[in-house]
Amino acid sequence: MRAQQAATAGPRSGVTALPGQRCCDNERVRIELLHIEGCPNTGPAGSRLREAVASAGLDGVADVCLRLLGNRDDAAAVYFAGSPTFLVDGADLFPGAERTSDLACRVYPTDAGLAGAPTVEQLRDALLAAAAQGANGR
Image (cartoon, rainbow, N blue to C red; front, side):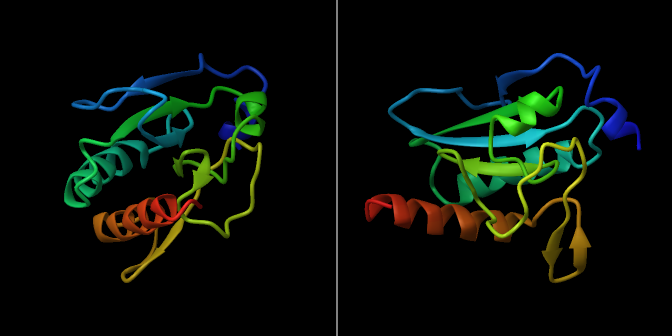
């Protein structure tokens, strides 16, 4: 698989802000979208995440960052369950998927079947649940 071949000679890695977002202030909630190079779901996932953050009213309290995982070491250093993975302060927004250092795709169950990214509604609901847990001291 091409993604597995990229594990040893991967692209650069790094963290950037999604358009219209800041990245990353230590006093704010940190939302990260982890992805691999060439993932066809990164664009839709980023768009849906921006919409969900706004819909959940988290624009003023969250930094949304896009993190490219360029190799297996990058993936092993964070909670990565395939591309795209959504983290809130380091915790998987959709727990239950197995952690991996493989540079591979992830699928999400939606009302329409398995998809390469969760829906805006799923993201919003998960963000609100994570915010409520954070308010209760996690």
